[in-house]
Picture 1 (cartoon, rainbow over the protein chains, first blue to last red):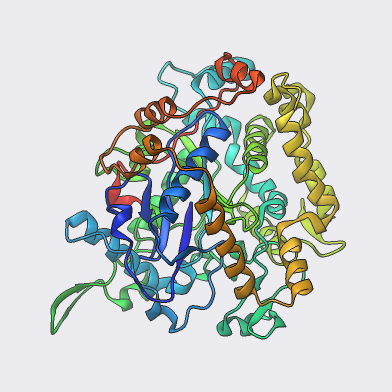
Picture 2 (cartoon, helix red, strand yellow; picture 1 turned 90 degrees about the vertical axis):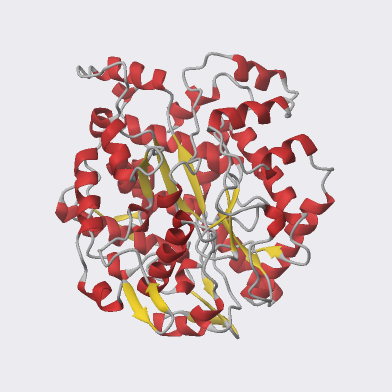
Length: 390
Length: 132
C-alpha cells in the first residue's frame, strides 16, 4: 500500500526508514513523500493486518512531526507539479532507471495524479486448489508444474472481475468524493465548503476519470480473455512508439549534459505504467520483464488495485474487506465468465466510471447486456453462483 | 457468494467470511454505510473542509499508533533489515516473533488442512528495475 507522508516541506524519504531501493517493506512510490509499505505473504488475514500495524508503528516512530495522510487523495499541495519531488534511489543504474521512469510518468500524466495513494491486495490460491478445481472442471491439460495459463483462461477470472468490479467498487471506495484543488473546478465538481469540491453521489473519485486514471490510456485496449492475449496487448504497448511522447523527448542533450526525461517514448514505458484495476502477476527473476515472467511460468497471483486508503482504519484497510475480497476472487474463479468482446469494453468502463462518480445516486442504472439495469440488481446478480459450481 | 463464504468459514461459529459479506452487501441497500457517505456526513455536520477532516484523522492515526502497546522489537527489527529474502523466509521469521491468537478456533484453523488455506504472495522487489 502507498501512503502520502504529510509534511509542510518537500523533504526526502527519512533515512531512519532505510533505503527506498533495497528495503523490502518500506520504500517509496512515485514521490519521495509517498511511502510504500509492503508486507510479506501470509495465509491468514490477521497476520497481514498485524504486520501492517507493525510497519505503521515503526514508521510513525521515525517521522518526527510528520504524518501519514489518512486518505487516498492528497490536498494542500501548493506549487503544482513542481512541489512534488520525484522518488530518488541513488546513482546506480537501477536507481536512476526508477527515477527516470517516474519523471516520464510525471511528464505524461502530471505529477498531481501520481500523488494519489491506494491499497494493493495481492492474492493467490494454493496449488492444491487448482488441482482440485482442474479435476472438478475436467480440465485435461494440467501438468505438475501448475502453469496457470490454461486455468486462467478456463476460469476467466479476470473477465469475471471486470464484469463485477463496478459493484464492488462502491463497497470499498474510500469516500474520495472531495477534491480540494482549484484545477478540479473545470471537472464539473460542486463546492461543499470553500476549497473543497465534491461529487454529491460519488464513491471514489480516485477510481474515476478524475483520479488515478488517465485519458492518454483511454485508447489502450489490453485483453484479459487469456494470458496470451494479455501479454500480446501489453507487449504491443511497451514496444510501440507514441508520437506525443516522442515530442517530449527521451534523452535530451542540454547545457548540463545528457538528460533522460523518460525511459522511452512508447505507449507504456514499462508494464507497470498500465493503469488497470487488477493485474495478473508473477514474481520475476532479476532483470526479467513482468510479461516475460508471465509467459515463462504463468500467473502466480493477482494484484487488486481498486481499494482506496480507508480513513476509518488506521492501517488503511480492515479484515472485513480482505475477507470479502477473498470470497469475491473465489467467486470470479468459479463463476461462468464468457470472454469479453471488444464491443463490451466500452460499457464495462462506462459502468466503472459511473459507479465511481455517481455510485450513491438513487435509482442508478448500469449497462448490462445492452440494457440499463439498476445497480442493485446488477450487484445481486454479480454475487450469484450457479449451484453446479459448488 | 453465500456458499463460498460458508466454505471459507470452515465451521467457525463466528462466521467471519459470512459476516464480511453481510457488511459489504449492506452498502448496496443503504448508501449511508459507504465510506464516501460517512465522510461526507462528517464534513456536513462539522463544517470542516476536506483538508481539515483529513488532517484531523491523520493526526488521530498517529496518536493511535504512538499510544499503542510498545512495538515488538523482534518483529520491528526485521522491518529495518534491508537484505532481500524470499517472502516465505520473511514470513517464517515473523511468525516466530508473533504469538498465535488465543482463540482455540483460530488455532484450529491455522493448523487445519483446509482446502482454502489461501496463499498471499507479495512482490519481493526481485525485479527492482520494473517495480513502481
